[in-house]
Amino acid sequence: MLAAVLSSVLAGVLVLLVYQGVAYPFFWADLTYYLQLRRYKRTVQARVRRGVLTYLDCFLQQARRTPAKPFIIFESRTLTYQDVDRRSNRFARALGAGGSPEQGDIVALLMCNEPDFVCAWLGLCKLGCEVAFLNVNVKAKSLLHCLRSCGARTLVVGADLVHLVKEVLPDLKQDNVDVWVVDHTSEEFNTLLDKVDNVSGDTLDNIPKVNVMSNFLLIFTSGTTGLPKAARVGHLKAIGSMAFFDMCGATSDDIIYITLPLYHMSASLLGIGGCIHLGATCVLRKKFSASQFWKDCLKHNVTVVQYIGELCRYLLNQPTVPEERAHCVWLAAGSGLRSDIWKKFLTRFGIRAIREGYGLTETSIGFLNYTDEVGPIGRASYFNKLSIPFELLRCDPQTYEPVRTNSGRCVRAQKGEVGILVTPVTTVNQFLGYAGNKVESEKKLLRDVFKVGDTYFNTGDLLLCDHRDFLYFRDRIGDTFRWKGENVSTTEVSEVLGLLDFIQEANVYGVSVPGYEGRAGMSAIVLKQDLELDGKKLYEHLLNTLPLYAWPRFLRIQTCVDVTETFKQQKLKLVREGFDPDVTHDPLFFLDVSQKDYIPLTSVLYQDIVSAKTNL
Ligand SMILES: *[C@@H]1O[C@H](CO)[C@@H](O)[C@H](O)[C@H]1NC(C)=O
Ligand SMILES: *[C@@H]1O[C@H](CO)[C@@H](O)[C@H](O)[C@H]1NC(C)=O
Ligand SMILES: *[C@@H]1O[C@H](CO)[C@@H](O)[C@H](O)[C@H]1NC(C)=O
Ligand SMILES: *[C@@H]1O[C@H](CO)[C@@H](O)[C@H](O)[C@H]1NC(C)=O
Image (cartoon, rainbow, N blue to C red):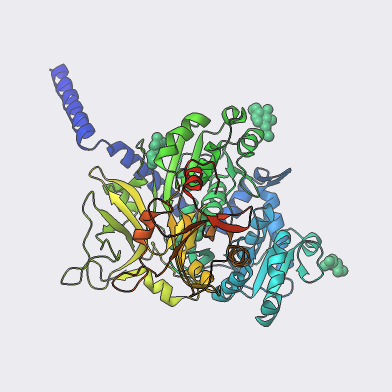
């Protein structure tokens, strides 16, 4: 009797499992991920009960728990959690000594990757300042714009970047910006390190309390248009980001290799923050180097590496070295890895797992690929939507504006249809906007989406959700493209090109080049009447105005600019035609950096570029 009951129960369970396998094959993966997110949420809640609310609080807690544990390994130095805590106390004392900056001030930080980036940052947090990270590729003119737009009155600059500041010194003086150089001596500027060496590293007894709903950091992004914008990053978002490596399955025993720039959210919040949350060790490198990558991993017993897609491709383009298989890296975590190199990356370098995620600086939306599918960036499962609400909206294929019904409401994209990713703005899913830029902040918001009065953040990213609920990244719309891991703003580049006396109009866009992630810059140019293209002058101009990743690598000379019916510059057709001299009769040019000039793009040169004989 019992046996009969048991066997029918077993049969029932089996039938259910088979049914689940067919109808909901990703049920367990979805549930596990959901439970992981829940577990992290509970960890955060438990911390909150102990008064550990912010990124800084988490760091201090970790420094108390594991003071002697190595936190940052950089070149030949190792700093423990306690070392970084004490050194950041010194930074706080040295900076705070003169009464400025003080609590609530915005302080801009312009530094390359080094342990003092973290010490200065945490020191400023201890003073209650809001830190604005500046991109170290910034040019002088842009630097002023960044400082003004975020309202920073203090600038902390690394010793190796002082030349950038010198160029705009008169303007900085006029704006009353205090400049501190992270160095022992300097002829022109206040220096920090001599003072840091001269003050105590003991615990500060008056760390200001912060409001967790307030702003923590400013991170400059080249969003969709114009010059870089300072995205406000709230404390909640920073705390959420610290879960990254934990969600990927890493533990406190892992040694995490970070080569991405710290002024980006990925390295500072997901990377360093992820280490702090786990109490793990981070091997920090000043700059990514493809040839040193596996050597470093082997030397420091690295177990986890953080990537952006481009980085993986550079590694695959390197000649084989023995270290690439001798290391003990088991996990690569990051974003922007294309499916065409995914498998190659795993097999060639003998890595067990890749965790591909998607995230934005401006809001909390994020996905993580936690199944064994190649291609998707995440899932739109029932469970996922419980933790991270989002929607895909149907949009107009020409303007990329969401389609509205007669009653003014938006429409959800169907399965298999590309839609714009939007996420509801709520108290926990904040969008704090861009500092000093109300207009741009408002532009990112969609109102009255499904009902009157609701508000959504428009990510500007096109995603597709298939019938199995997998999400695929399709494109970033608007006026940016990605190249070498950076967003390039087409408006900014066109404005810069327009300053040259022989250019009447420039239409900038990005083109795909086989073998490269993202898109390389290209500009269709209309020359002023009777004037010619002066490639050398253009090169010099770019050198002085734009970071290398934003330079147009290809030019297309047109007699008039293509415009849409609404007189916007027509880009789609140009993007499709690319830089193939057999597709257009317009004269094409290629930037030859060694000659510091633009040279005619012939069919032979075209072949060399697409077959990677000529490098970009
Ligand atoms: C270091 O501290 C001493 C005593 O507190 C002071 O006299 C000296 O000027 C300080 N030096 C620097 C470089 O600040
Ligand atoms: C690129 O733009 C997106 C969307 O505005 C932003 O979230 C991201 O942080 C930007 N990335 C960089 C490297 O500026
Ligand atoms: C790496 O691991 C090996 C074997 O466990 C050990 O002998 C070596 O000292 C480690 N190296 C470092 C830099 O920790
Ligand atoms: C997702 O991760 C798995 C490993 O867990 C990997 O095999 C798969 O290719 C990934 N898919 C993508 C591209 O998201």
